[in-house]
Image 1 (tube, helix red, strand yellow):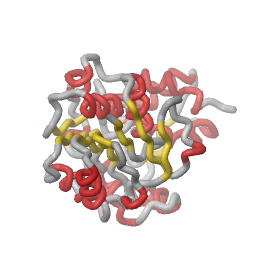
Image 2: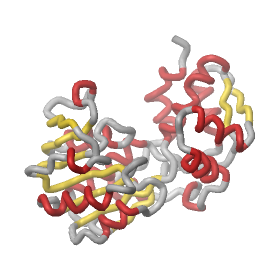
Image 3: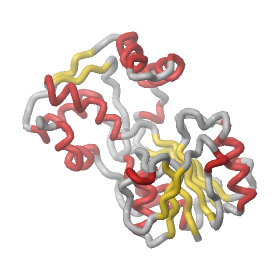
Image 4: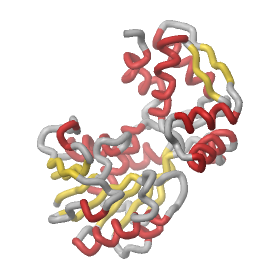
Amino acid sequence: MTVLVTGATGNTGRHVVAELVRRGERVRALTRNPAGARLPAGVELVAGTHTAPETVNFDGVTRLHITATAGLADVGAELVKRAVDAGVRRMTIVWGGYVGPTEQAMTESGVEWTRLEPQEFMSNTLTWTDSIRAEGVVREPFDLPGAVVHEADIGAVAATALVEDGHSGKVYNLTGPEALTTRERIAVLGAALGRDIVLEQITRQQAVDRLLAEGVSAADAEYVVGWHGDPPPEASTVVDTVEQVLGRPARTFAEWVAEHVDRFQDS
């Protein structure tokens, strides 16, 4: 059995690969830049992208992991069809925040599927790196609670659904073990760094403009900021799905910070 992981060097894809390797599975990793992938030894690296389905090599693949990313909506149904036609019989997908064409195509594919619906990633905290290192400041428009989830837990749940039975047709809302406001997350970071970090609240429009300056489309910028300003109830409601699937508690934000604290320290 070969498991194909698309977006294998991405935020969650990398963790799906790592967990599959830990379990002894044969993994094919799809990435635009195999030379710079930095994935575990033994992984078969292939060039391509899931947003160009014609570049995806499904030879010998029976299981597939997809992360819904920008640009996939227009071709996701084709990707799923190519996978099914090639013999893939089980799929997982990390949604893009809503049930789009790719997610729908998977549910209608006739093969086993599992959809993962994480609300907010702990790794989003990395967007604060520069301002914390330079100024000890975080600039955000909102201070609302969020049950942020560790991206490695997302990867572990995906890998489990790919290789173990009992997850077909399931939709898994994934959260961490606690709901923390922006200030509370900053306090955890500050304690780990041994320094004070200040929250400087900016306007909604300033948040949108910041994303636009980073090359995010206007529609996506409005969606992201709007979501954070008026998140769904699921975003702050802690659920134990990670523990139910993995048999262990979900990782805490403090654990995530301990793993990444060097990223926020002065060089």
